[in-house]
Image 1 (cartoon, rainbow, N blue to C red):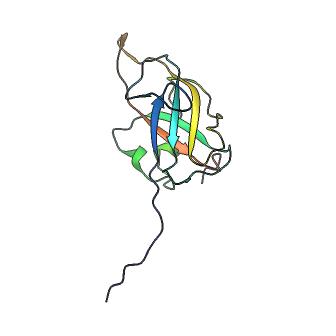
Image 2 (cartoon, rainbow, N blue to C red):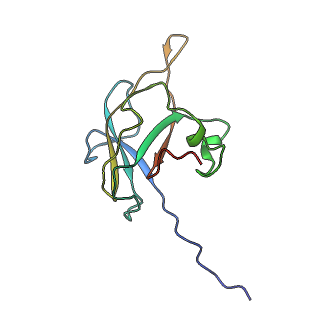
Image 3 (cartoon, rainbow, N blue to C red):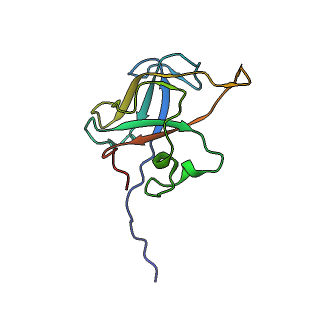
Length: 137
């Protein structure tokens, strides 16, 4: 007979763009060059570590799906892709704080994207690292 066995927990993290660290006003999209707070909700279950060793990386969206690979894959987009050159600030060493409920990356600015000198909308993928963010393997 088959018996259902627990295999672990799945935590779903989500991000939102806000005007302030408390995230009182959310935005579905952003204007290039405008500062915003990138808010990472830690699955509503205190799933983030209570430390400041967390980091965020904004990378170009992949049409090939490499950004959808798991973090432990050597080909994962978050592992092998550099931060987008359109990210003006903060740097890759910015921390979202020590809260285990949410991480707030404040004063984020993403610059405009041009195609043939025409400003164009752009999609990005967001990589969140909770700890040991300098490890490569």
